[in-house]
Image (cartoon, rainbow, N blue to C red; front, top):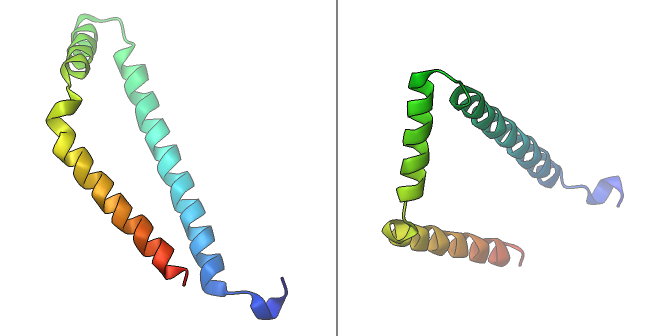
Length: 88
C-alpha cells in the first residue's frame, strides 16, 4: 500500500471505532467492578441489596424480551446488509 492509495476517511473510521470500542469496554468493566466491590460488602444493607439483585436476576425470563431480541436481530441484519451493499 502506498500513499496514493491511502484513504484517510477509512483510516479515521478504523481509529475512531477502535478508540470508541476500547473506551466503552473500559467504562463498562469499571462500572461492573464498582458494583462487584459495592455488593461484596458485609453489612446488613449491602447483603440485603446483594440478595435482592441476585433474586431479580434469577427471576428474569428471556421469553419476556423475545420481541425485543427479535427487533435487535432484525436491525442487526439490516445493518449487516447495508454494510455488505456498501462494499460495492
